[in-house]
Image 1 (tube, rainbow, N blue to C red):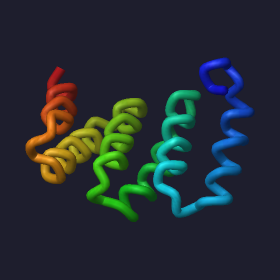
Image 2: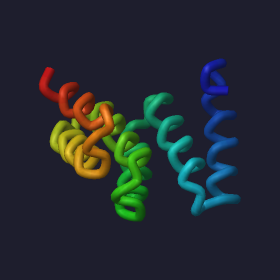
Image 3: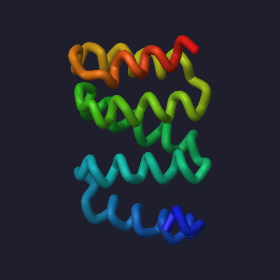
Length: 104
């Protein structure tokens, strides 16, 4: 729905899913993506901060945190997420990519 410009409907669907499955990390990450992509990066930051607290080593959560931090201009948080990714998955290419994106 977001791709069709139906932001309110997309939010309603994702928020309903969050209420019915509050512990589902995939749904929470969908919520973060929706918020970020629809221009509510500050709210996305709040949601992803809670996810990072609950799941500090989850690479999908770390990546979401990085993307949100970039969206709100929080380079320190983005750097911390890149470092967390490098620590969590040292051989994966995403950590160096994230770190490199910050050096530009």
